[in-house]
Image 1 (cartoon, rainbow, N blue to C red):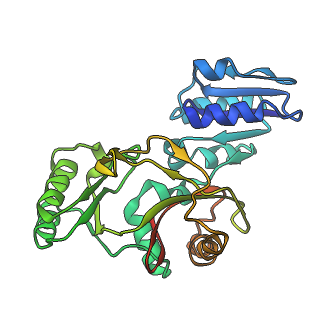
Image 2: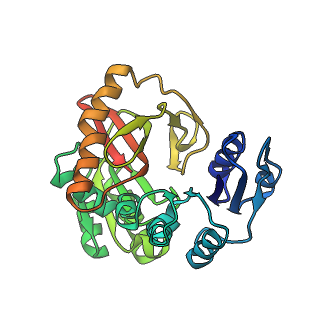
Length: 291
């Protein structure tokens, strides 16, 4: 098999490292790849060949996959998926591991996801959606307790502010909506209640009908020791997460993952690829923070 991995980060390096070990892989490409990926090799496919195509260059990637007759393309980053790379490849008769553009909106828009969860009764934090910065700031100032302000669009894991009070939340709204801290991703914001508990990541492989669970994990979100300071996109992780017992995993599958797949299918957005849920394990049970 000839495979193409799209992306150039640590996630794609790991995929290439493992895929290169398979005796079924005769040739492995990565676009754009990186210097470490270029040093990766397998017993049959030889060195991974890095291709000078950026992950957002959908036209170039489709042309390359068609010309080289790829048996399978695996897409790591979220941006090309949200832009419809999987749709473009499949329209050419080329297999792709990753969700369609409509299904990838699960990560591409926080507002879409929160509304989907509400419509289908999937547990998550209470929230409001704002496109008017003045109304969003007013909403924040009316609340004394902690709030979470999220840029609606893709912000590389950095568009979330956990605000201890309304004043801090209002400042986060201004940064996103007025000052453009996250570009177009911050023109709309989701403001939600802050959930308390232990955060965990749950990943599953899915074809839209069935789930194959991967081990749970937890990452280090806050900048400072003892979970202080602003959120990051994650600074390392460990797996499995001790808090996710087999019983709890079963509950997560029943109450969150399976209902999400059903909800997407009912709304004509069947999901395939990796379903990646960020959850908070609260006293009242697991709740979705984001996908």
